[in-house]
Structure formats: structure tokens, C-alpha cells
Length: 242
Image 1 (cartoon, rainbow, N blue to C red):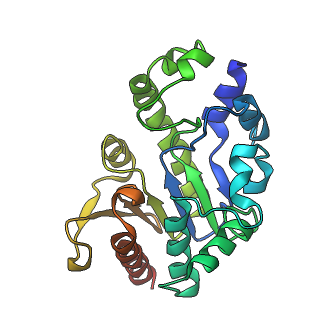
Image 2: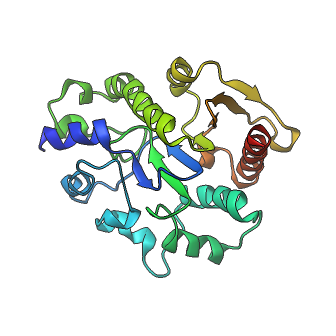
């Protein structure tokens, strides 16, 4: 693989949607099945900060945006959060979520941005194949990649936060190992508890006019708890900005 494609993706590409929007949702990284042409993913995003989610024209990616597509496991939680924020819709049915995913998620003209903390698509957090695709030293192990690239990416995202000043930024990537890197930029993230979401917690701070949140990955929390946490994050943001 062309290392310049990889370096460009690391240094520039953030994800999908509208950076001028009120809410940014930031995950760990994109997934991929491993049977697609990964070069194409990097070519479609080359030299771009964000693109419309439909511009990533690989079959593995576009399967979620065709007619009658299956609801993607992570997307459904993010969509429910967006519906709470923009439509005050706390209990959308399955078809409403599916329609949102197919027609509205990650669009350049939309009301949100769907971004990734780490830039390279990967099968899972426990797998690593980039050492076979590149000789770059930071890609030889998952540990090196996370340690070296994470602070660079947080700083890149932070520069965009300072420019666009979204109302809400939700890092839904979990606390370890990302919390220390985030606190180097944003200061202490304070714990928020609420009886409606059991043992789950939200971490929060205010950075300029932006409310920064850190949560566990939604699949590990479950729908009901994630809905409660999303509602709480939106309530906090509304109070802080009101």
C-alpha cells in the first residue's frame, strides 16, 4: 500500500457529515470486513477532512445505505441520540431509525458530524493487520498505533473544535486508554452519575463554548442506558448554553 495514502488519512481525514453542525459524535475507528479493497477507502478520503457518507463507495460501506438496509449495530444508538437532540424523539420505531440511517446519517448538509478518533479502518479493537500493509513504524503494533496516533488525532480534532465550536462533542470510545489523552487537551473530565443509568457514568467538561463528553462504547451499555445518558448529555448542554 502507498504509505502516503495512510499518512494523509492520519493527518487529515476525520469522517463524515457537517463540521458546522451542533453535534459531533466521535467513535474509536471505522470497521471493515477485510475482504474489500482497503486502498479504495483511503483514496476516497484522500486530502479531505470530511466527506458525505455516500462518497465512500465500497460495497462493505454502502451496504448500510441501500434500500431496506439492515440497521447497523452502532449507528442505531447514534441515530437515537440525534433524534433526541433534534426532534425530541425518545422512542423511534425500527423503520424510523432505518430510514434515518439510509437517508440522513453522515451527510455533508446534515445537522451532525460522524467522526473517528483513530483514522484507519480495522476489523475490531482486538485485531491488527496494518503491519502487513505498511512499513511505517507507528503501524507495526496496535499498541504503538494507539500511543503515537491518539494524541495527534485529538489535537487535530481540537483544532477543528476551536474553529467550528460545536455545542456538543461526544467521544463514545470508552475511558481506557483515551481519557488521559483527552484530559491533556481539555483538562479534568468530571464524572456525572444519574440513577436512571445504573453504574454507567458520563465524563464531562466545558471547552470554550463546547460541551465535551466521554462515554463507553454504546454496544457495551445497552439501548436503555445509552438513551438515558444521551438525554442527560443533551440536558447538560442545553443548560450550559442557555
